[in-house]
Image 1 (cartoon, rainbow, N blue to C red):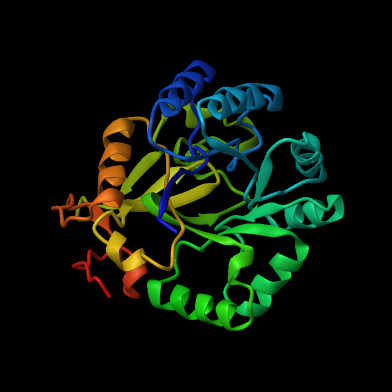
Image 2 (cartoon, rainbow, N blue to C red; image 1 turned 120 degrees about the horizontal axis):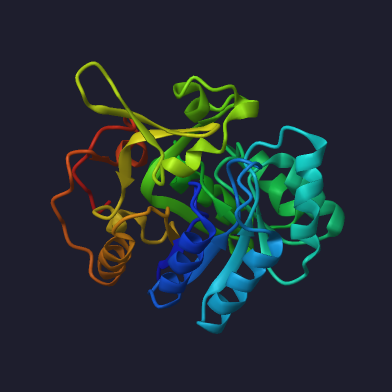
Length: 297
């Protein structure tokens, strides 16, 4: 199977009109699978489920495969109640980023995507997800090519590999951690309950630099991301036979250029010079912020 291109759920908080225009542009892009929905903070309510479904309809008409993403950290029963309609809409497969959503999908006997926020690190966990109804698996972002290769060899040996496809985040700031605290609000000296939805002022998160003035983290509400941009565009040859979907994470600027570049790399991989604030370390089993020369493996 030729590797295909997917667009993960938007991790940031944008105005409704910005979101709608963004996905109108994506409808004309070569992206083949698109994830919609809020995956970070339940306070971000620019769009309702009906709005997401309307965008999904337009994308499906444009020939895209569409899936709905859900929160990566469910903190209250009310947030879980908000997710139930996502499972009951009856049209689109849901991406589960919290184990509670896996349980809901299992109870509803619905297929689901196991998102990268789920701690699936071995065959026991993977088989439990398959038994619950998993049809796609997004590998945890901190894991490596060698680790993935070993997992898939085990899945093949047990006759399970054909039951799911594999998706890997190949471009974007890495989601490293989630917390009950809102770090964006804290950085502005505001309590979480009085955040005034300040994330909307930072369309690509709030960059934190270290004492050497180098990018260290990106604050994105309750989510902490890598300061460097994870970029596996030079590593596509090493993904062949292992990865079914190369995932791009949305950003507010130059999205078309990023998508077109990755698309051309999928068609004809070539070594490119990457920006100094890009990295690929986790893929090659070293520190995440390192940039390792590509290997065809």
